[in-house]
Image 1 (cartoon, each protein chain N blue to C red):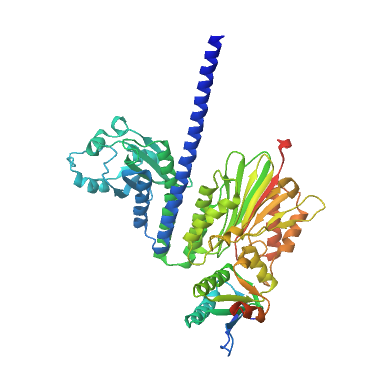
Image 2 (spheres, rainbow over the protein chains, first blue to last red):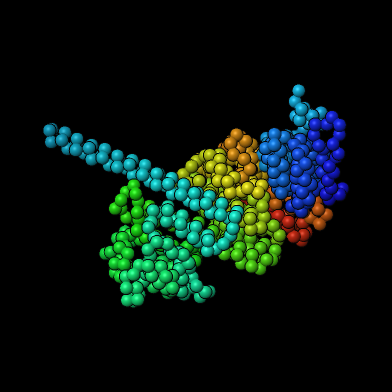
Length: 119
Length: 479
């Protein structure tokens, strides 16, 4: 597995949110480029973002700070950040640090859809 | 019979009077303590806000003195620090208000012209041991002089020059070594005109001086680093500073064995632990991990340590203490830095440990013979992120130290220690060694874990701090 990679998917017709895949390690080294990319996306008035964490193998406190920063910024703009399918290990880190109450964590895209456009 | 009744009534009256006085004294003590606590926290907030904008030593000294004068309601004051490395001469760093020379000087030059006073005092140098400022610098003992006019330690010229009334002086101490002296002159309390400094004022000055010393020390170190602009130096400074914040001794009780150890990593850090005397019967135990590393992390750690110490005194609810500490830390950390902390209180009579976990690693109980180690993880989120409803989900729980066996608090540096293949030491191996060595003393158990980790990492330098605090109940009977 690559140490770190990030893909921002193009906006799809009819999709209410932008999808981002992050792969590998999110630590104090890789977080700089991660934040730059995500904040760049938010600068384009995107307020609904889903980050696929299913291939994120490790997250450090710096990575969690970055996710928290994004959550704050999106909620201020009445938007939302949704985290899709974190691995057990990453989920355990969220839970230990108490972030499972704050982050919106989902298991499927359908579930994310429900958060972004509640019927 | 009548005499007896009269005596009894008088005695009861005296008793009631004494009880009432005791009650009033206790209430007063509580109020004074609360006021002192709030002032120290106010100071931290003000200084904390300053940190995020600029780190300039002279400006910070100015700020510290300003705050101190406001808090002690003093009319004038000054901060003196050593000049040069010899620690023989003190120079004024900042002076505010009408501040006379407090050692013997030839005052002819002054000719009681107040407008030259500040200029004069700023040029004066004081030898260690000379006058009251030099004495405080030499002895490291704070000094209260309620009435300077009739105190032989204060030169008469000084009290004549500015109508000197009361004085309080406290040393700026870093690890018991004097770095300087802070002085406050003439109390001007609008709520109580005509009063002079008392013991409570001196206590407050001492508490503020403690904070000021650590703050100034840190800024001085940081200024050094800024000049050098070298990453390696910054890390060294942060490490030194971190070491300064850790307890040098472990409290010792007949009924309770305690051990704590923090092994800083070569590169980054952020771990901290502390022991706090909550009251005579209760001992507070803190372990934490700051997410920011280097100097910014060390600054957050310093705020955390002082806030914890101020908030923990006299409060038996770890949850409430952490809620208040969270409010302070959240104000001080704006850049996403957070801190995971477990704070617990040992009741040395009951043998219980009541704790709350703010996003920190679980508490590990080794259990008694036959049962495996048990990880306990009551809900609670890290400090420094949010206040209010999300943070308030934190819960406290009480474990009986007798059935817990040995209680182990640790940081993520333990399970996340890595070998050369980038594999983690892991929770399973950690719990296994803890289970098999449960009969060890707390010290022995920490050594066993560290040995096992270094066996696993086989010489690879650790990438994160490793910290362990271990408690074992010995029991009342074995005193």
